[in-house]
Image (cartoon, rainbow, N blue to C red; front, top):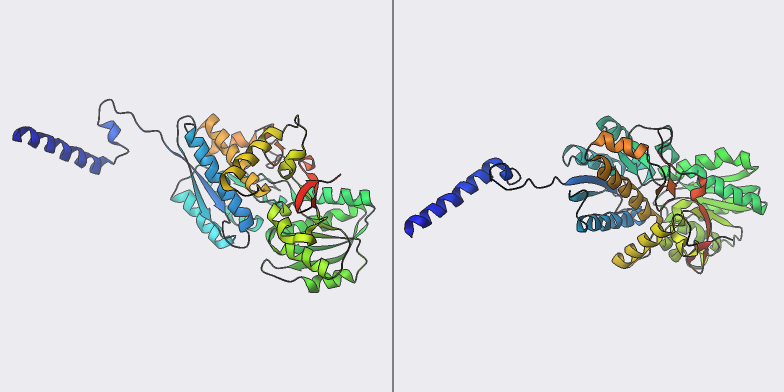
Length: 393
């Protein structure tokens, strides 16, 4: 018995030595009949989970975790486990660049979804282009994909299309003179440029042009200037909480002209926080926030209803378009991995040639000339009514 125990102990020691020498992931080579474990597919995510853009990044983070759990519970991607490595950018460009470099060099991810903001996306474009890794941004600025960058895509609708939908509605209402007030973030600046560029095409004159910073808490001074002009409506273009303050300050100043927001208003928390001041706000947005009003035969109805139901059941909070942007980006990457495997170049090529992909933001049709894949038809005009979003009739 003593001799047998000695032999067993020796075998255990030998196994431990082998594990130490070759590593646990390589032991399959030395043990007959032991299968090689499937390689984990790593995908990076750059989200502003905290900071001034947390209302964007938090639902994106939640969505990523939900998708990771669902994919792995179903057996992974062709048997390969999915690991989504999430980095909190805090909405800061420097931190985003650092996080992107970590994901690429240390984690060796196959693709990156995010960042949440336009400015931080622009900051990492040179990084991903040099590293030749697919990036699917969750930010809206058109400059992200125009001109086309080989390795960069985005899932939110274009800000130019948002401006067009706003101006089309103004034309219907006979509005010709407007004021614009925009955030100084990358998203706000790009929106301001589109509003100014497109206004003449729709016979609209901008009679006041004001801005505010992402940390500003009172826009009374800017709105007082706007009130002194003959504006028939105000367009507020932002993604930060300041867009709610604009609505409240307008009410405090007795301004009764219509307030239009950009698609950056697509989180019901903004409307809830605005309270009575938010009633009647008009903005272009994807159909996710008004899915219950869509006809059953609408091509997006099933996807939107399923995502909304799953997200709200898991996190006990209202779904937002921002989480939807992450859903679209991650599903594109997962579909590419399923079809072409863990090859960055093949993933890039697959996404670039994807047609009729039904997402939360619309039905995507990518091409070498179009790395967004959406048109203005991806937008509906919504209005705030009783602190809820409903289709504008």
